[in-house]
Image 1 (cartoon, rainbow, N blue to C red):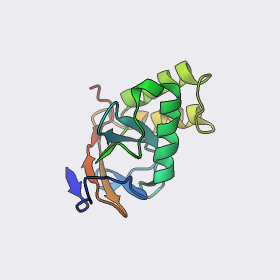
Image 2 (image 1 turned 90 degrees about the horizontal axis):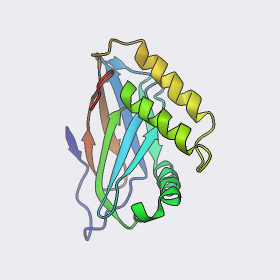
Image 3 (image 1 turned 180 degrees about the vertical axis):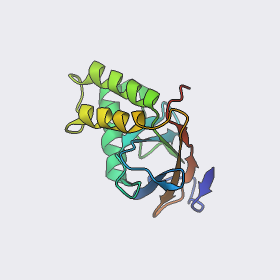
Length: 167
């Protein structure tokens, strides 16, 4: 589902001050869930970020600083693959709860790049804990997400996940 916040000025899109994300499982808040946030760029690669885990209300607040810190970390590791996130933001952000498959891929990336870049403290443990939460659910469980933005015009694409789904 797409949510339009409003229109932008002069085709220059600004990253939001914050995104409010809520994950729900069968109509109830889903805690301990990590969320993939993809900021789409006008050129070069999009930035794929991970935020969370969700709190007991199923909520996460992702700030502009969260986005910029993770984007800069990716740029520093792969400079030629990414454009400046501030100057090249397309105005679209996709959000999706992470599946067990997504978490496995994130753990693989952590194991591969932990010595080359910085990760949040206890990142591996955070990923493993989120995998345990999902492992306690039926693999066909669907986690829905809703997103709200502040301060800017953003097209938000909300994509639910199936816990055990492989793309």
